[in-house]
Length: 179
Image (tube, rainbow, N blue to C red; front, top):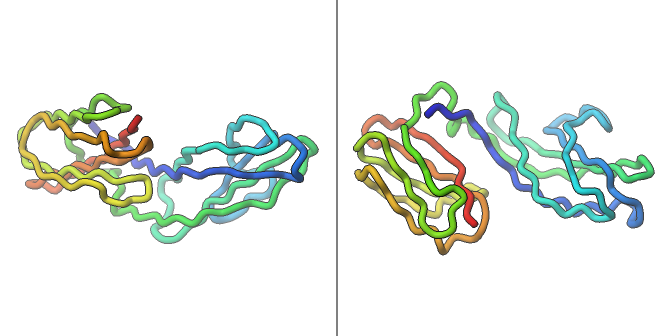
């Protein structure tokens, strides 16, 4: 199972443009402003206030270090807001490009209570679960083909399961959605 690098930023929009006009468009860009109306469009539900959670993919090949995500909106009168920005770090040491990954299945996904992990090979593995901010929530060693992990105490959201083969140091990361 070969995976591509996907980083997700959850960003809560709480824009109000002039207080009365409907917001009809939104766009984002990283670091350098390409000009109003030239950034990447965001699909939104139009309204006077936009309050949505977005998943935005960070482009492949973005350099390590500090970056900014910028978001702005446009109202029905054609007026663009000032952008708001969110800082984030890129660390390509977590990237999976060009690395052989571990063959496993995670189910069910989305999950409510118990997450099953089935490995193709019987090896020693390190299982780590991270929240969206990168905080490690679980660290477990296993040598079983099928693992059943209780995540019922986790809040609803997106998590990342990182699996490391203890013998080869190969690693794979997958997104897990907790209901």
